[in-house]
Length: 114
Length: 116
Image (cartoon, rainbow over all chains, first blue to last red; front, top):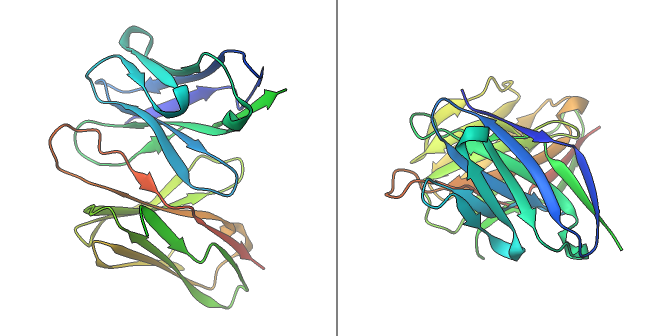
């Protein structure tokens, strides 16, 4: 069964600084991987996804993530944080075969300091 | 309307009430989902529907009753709920079975449910 672990339930960075949100997955074969963002009182919005093409995936709002099979990681980064990036971020995994269940991490709340 | 819509956005109900949550997807997808999001817990998948047929029920109590009359609409009927059922209920949809894989899910804004 697939699972994801997000390291750090809270991350705080200064405006303009690098954003790094960590996600490690557990799966017997490389799965599909996703990052979602949730703003207050809203649903989840897809930031980017990995489906086995390029290992460096670019998403919306300047975010990108790199799939590293050797480290079973899919960390999310953004070179320069904006105040509008403050939100909760979720990493999710889905197996390539069988059930279509999307398994989410516990989320990381990102705070941007002015 | 575009994407996935949910109504109502907020709902307060007593433990003896009966209410329903509605979800509609305008994306032409063939699968729909209900999730529960509680404070300090990961998102929990509740139900999965493919082509209107329920294909997954993650041990959800019978006080939650889903209904999928067609591939665009999904309901969650609620009755005799408990205070611990207070949460954000999210609906999602995806297109399953196509080429290319990925099958990302698109989420609605959610219904904030409070059980008193």
